[in-house]
Length: 169
Image 1: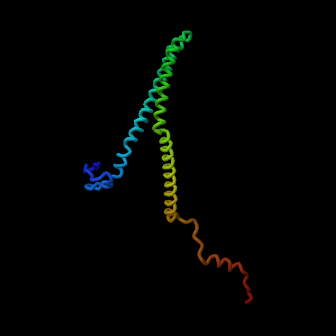
Image 2: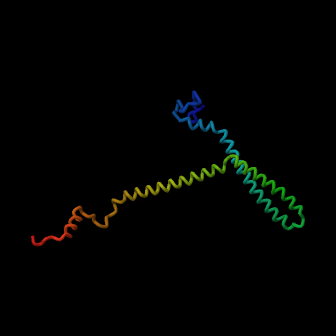
Image 3: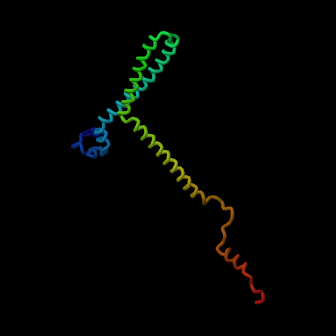
């Protein structure tokens, strides 16, 4: 194995760090180990997306051709029989593209990406709320008080004043 940073040849493929520059080789070895399967999956995804896009373009083209050329000549079914195989062929192309996307687990990963995006938004909101409460608690000392706090002796004094005293003593 070669170090991707300095190009130094490593003694063993199980080496975790480059002996020359110290780069962690764990990520590089994982990329190399899973690269064949990942490349196949990405190729299936690209093929599927391109076939679906081609299907949409072909169907739009055939619908326009059918609308412009065939509709005025509905009494002659030859136009319909010429047009129909093209539409079926484009739908078959779309089916192959969809099957390619299904084989590559594209839709499952899209769902996982949506879930991760949702979780990251929830975390951002939670952090914003947490930052808001900490900033509110920090700023609480700078807010002027509307009323002076009661003194320690104020409450007992009020209670003593409420008790009737013997005046004749």
